Length: 171
Image 1 (cartoon, rainbow, N blue to C red):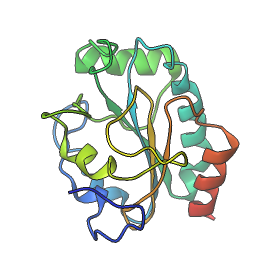
Image 2: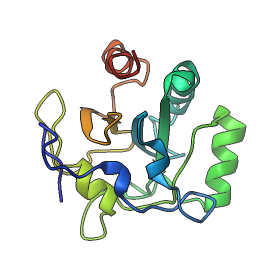
Image 3: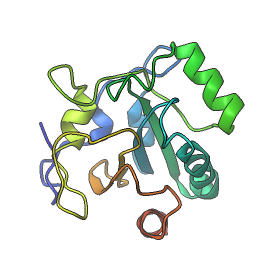
């Protein structure tokens, strides 16, 4: 099922089952009532330095009911080849990441995870919907679990448009 731009599908993104990077359920339902920025991440990408901005965004708004959720993916030129342990160590040691990370999943194609089945129906500001274009594509989820915004991979986490969208949800 995909989520349309009006969010009228009634399906909360937070109802999807996905495991955490450490194993066991990531329990997305615990984020109901919060704003969540879901980002497909990779450790060996030219956009990998966005981890720093994602962490700062997470820290800045966590007390107001916001979190970043990183979703590792190795579908773009093999830029997330590591094991769960290697990914966790890289994120912590290199960027001081404290926000949660899920298991590594596929975001496009026949093996697309159910989470991305719901996310990819939503269009970004330029009208792009469908397949994820690259690492670090971002989806902002409202407190009711519906997609409220989609940002291209090149949009920096601390850009004015992302910050304004997050602040509108946590105000």
